[in-house]
Length: 393
Length: 62
Ligand code: HEM
Ligand code: SF4
Image (cartoon, rainbow over all chains, first blue to last red; front, side, top):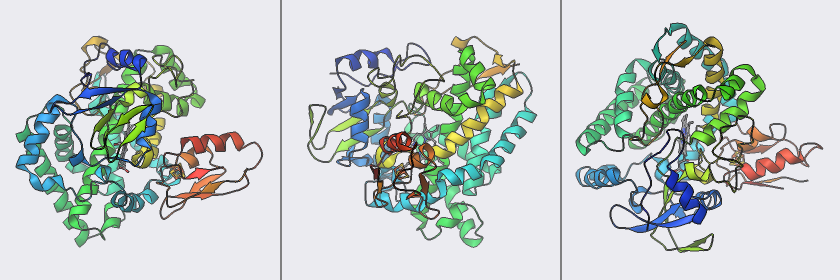
């Protein structure tokens, strides 16, 4: 019986244990911190099959938590905040048909074409950030975090001046080892802020996305806003920070991203595959007995899917541990698969396709301002990345 | 090659429109799949097969 591997040997590779397990098979019995005997999924095929299978539920209350520090906190959080178990608009944690209702409300706002329409504004935001940067800099604070934050604020209609609140609170909520007191405080603070914002939109609707959802109940709108605001800035921010770190330590790949416009789109897909920043889950709970890859999963058992491991499966990607911006990375599971596949993926793609080349072309001499081993990694966070990236040029 | 698309199943992820933009679009309102041309024009078959493979919800088939 295994437990969930968390310790990385090298900052850009998933823990070696995943590779060892994957050689033995695609699914493994795993003991959860609360004693539950569930499953760990390490293979590409099994991961994709489970994510596409609606006999698996994404409801929080049906799942056991795989990460030890999180498991302890989750129990206390449930005991102290019983009413948050039911988060009315948090559709990531719903099954059909409830999930479908929210998803269909939003998909029209995130189509490929709509996101393309945002390109000029995202390019402008990126150039403005680059104009303000002076060497040496922390790339996270000066570039990676502000760009997606500004973009999601404009899209949703959240004042960017309020970023301190939501950036601080989401950082606390995404920490894997915070204490329950600060977690609850962050939850309440952000919820209070968003309720206030919703009231303002009701009084004075604008053109942005949240005002388009005023038919929802306040509680529902809170859940949607919570999800979109956190998912909308933390994810792309970490891809930009970690992706730049990966490129700086792979100079030939960096040169491709900088000098060859035709390499950018595919290069972004490869960075997504190689870095797979959602590194601790997702989980699902079997609603009935299901057979996957010859394994019998019983109703009620939790499965934890390692997306980084699936994306490094040599059965699907040749030489998977090599970062190669020219390979075909299509089919990667970084945005998930099935009905919960990332709603914001076309936005994230456009942000990265603009931001990486713009940064590298503005500062062709960009380099790390510390040893690679000194870069503080986000092993303690639900979304992987770098806490800081000291750079100069 | 004919395309079948089921907008009830579609979750509007846009992989089809990203992969084969000359064949698939998404509706303005719901973001669900719109088939622009079927049968598939010559030279687009491989892209369409890849789009079908990429679709996360199984909403499109040929
Ligand atoms: C590189 C950036 C991103 C990555 C790697 C990423 C990854 C993911 C993954 C893996 C899931 C599925 C989780 C599961 O199946 O349990 C997901 C869902 C989701 N993502 Fe993202 N995401 C990114 C950017 C964004 C952005 C920019 C937004 C918002 C604008 C966003 C909004 C969402 C939402 C709302 C869901 C839930 C969808 C549903 O349940 O139907 N994401 N994301
Ligand atoms: S890829 Fe599939 S789910 Fe996504 S928009 Fe196209 S048909 Fe719908």
